[in-house]
Structures are given as C-alpha cells and as structure tokens.
Length: 430
Image: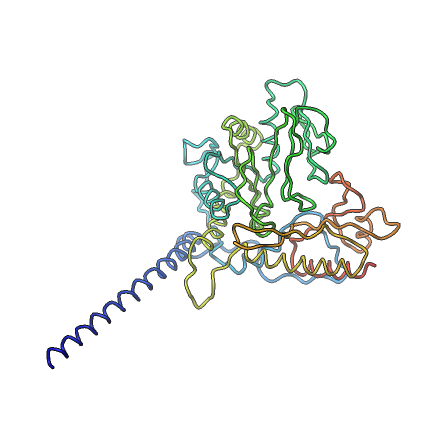
C-alpha cells in the first residue's frame, strides 16, 4: 500500500511538473510577443521611452462651424489621425541631432544611394505581409511623394540622351492628370483610349483616381511603356487579388498610413538601368530625399507590420491597433452612408459597388475607394462642382480628369465631422 501511495504521489508530481512546464512555455511565448511589441515601442520612443513633445497636437477634432466651407478637393487623409491617436507613443519618432546628417545612406552597395536601409527593409516587409506587390528581384527607389517618382519614371523611360521629340504621355479618362509636368523629354497627350501613335508612356492608376475603377494598360503598341500607380492598392481600399509584378510600380505613405505631410513615396522597378535613371532624376532635382521623412516612415511602417506579423498577446489595454482593419471599417461605414444618402436625394449617382475575394483578408470584401466620383443627375445642371460650391462643398470638377463636368471628385478620407457635414448638405439637395 505504501509503495502504491508513493507511486501515485510521484505520478501526480510528474503531471504537475508537466503542467507547469506547458503553462510556462505558453507564458514565455506570449511574453516574447509582448516583449517584441514593447521593444518596438521602445525603439520608436528612443532613450528613456519618452517622445519629444509634438508641435502639432493629436487631440480631439475641432468643431466645425455650421457654415464652414468643406474643402474636399484634395485627398487630405486626416481620417487616419484617429487611428494614430489610438496607437499613441508607439508611433512616435525621435531623431537625435547627430542622425541623418549625410546626403548618403549607410549602405554603399544600394543603387539608390540616398535610401535609408531600414526603410527599404520595412517597405519590402510590408509588401510581403500584404501580398500586393512582388519585391524580390526589384530595385527600390525612394522619392518625395509619388509625384516626384512619376516624373522620375517618365524621365527614365523617355531616354532623353537619344531623343529629339518628347514622348507622348497618356492615360484613360477619367485620369489623374499630369499635364502640368512640363518637360522637353515627355509631353501630356491626353486620353489613352484615343491615342493612335506607336510610342508612348501610359500611366495606369489602379484603383483609379478619381473613380476607383480597376485598370490595366490599354495601349498595346510595341513602343508603349507603362507606369503603374498603385498608391491605392491596399486592403482598406480594394480587394488584394494578388501581388502586382509590373515593370514600374509606385506607392506612397500618404494614402497607405495617412501621413501625407511626410511627403514620401517609393517605386519598385524591375530594370536596373531604369531604376538608375530614376535615381539620377531625384538626385538632380532634390539631391536625394529627406532623411527625417525616411526615418519617420520607417517607424510608421514598422507599427503597421508589427500588428499583423505578431500574434497580439492578451492584455488589459486590449488588442493591438491594426491599420487596415481600422481604415476598412471606417470606409465601409462611410460608403454605406453616402450611397444611402445619394439614393435618397435622387440628385446624384455613384459608380456601382464592386467586391471581390481579398487574399489578405481571406474573405470577400467590398471596394471602398478613397474618392467618391459623384455625378449630378439634376435636370439643367451641367457643372456639378459649381452646384456643390453653392452649398459650400469644394470638389474637383470632372473636366480636370478629362471627364464630364457633371462629375466631381470628393475626398472620402477627411475627418469624421467633415464627412458628417458633407452628408447633411448632400441630403438637402434634391
């Protein structure tokens, strides 16, 4: 009996030890994730874990006056401010006085000599997580927003050293116009659907600005080259159907995270010589790209990736904020409200709603473009922008995009109180 009792006690002890080990392992794994996120915050806060006091406050939204003019002409993405307030100090960037002083990056082997290596790692990491672009085998060129990269890419493709006539630049209407980008090497030639020449540079914006349509190149001639503007090819705006693998692909921080003031974009370029010429253009025009912008973008992209790459541990403060989840929920709700308002007034129409399976979200999602392409259906109204201006709503008229003046582009990424007032004013038009 004594031997049996001793055996039972030994068995219980072994079971208890095993249970403790399993529990300890689980706690260790959770603590590693928690520690990883804490390390990310600490790295972003700098020494002492205290961020510098920001010049611009991140407090609650300011109240709008009832007669305020709603300027929705630009794509100012202030909707994202609510998300970054929730992230808090983990999204802070501390830059010491001795950092970023040289024109050159720390990586002598990189083709883009002013590209910070940490930014390149975060850009490639995020694309791999989302699955919206192929990064292996591509050169990364950084620029001051996508606008500079547009010019750099057109310069690289127009081969200025071997040309006596500017190359036509085209895009299907309605298009994001670049007709003000004047150059002896390329010239704006309008709607790609009516282009009859052989050699051209086609700008393919997908999802398209202004109407959110999914686009492919339409010019099929042997001399046609394409630049793919994919700044809206992120999960909050459209289903991610697969990794894009075009010759030149443009992205920007502003529409991805809302940090328009950082003025940073990047291009994924397949051909080394094209990438080299793009780097030369950025070098000659601005002598590289602001290091402070690159450092901030590095930290911001790291916050976005951390939330999806790590398994969020249980914590009293709740789940780790996730950018794409936040933006998709917000935009889905806004589009639901806008479509209901437009249907109720009968004075306007919108492009049909589209949806598709998203490889990132692992489910079917509805496209939620960053802009509303609003068409006026009121009899006798030929200029929708003028009609809205009478209600103190400023939008971009359709003629700016090679389209109909009865259409207007409205920014969907402004603050909540601006969007709510927009809906109120639209509902009064019938």
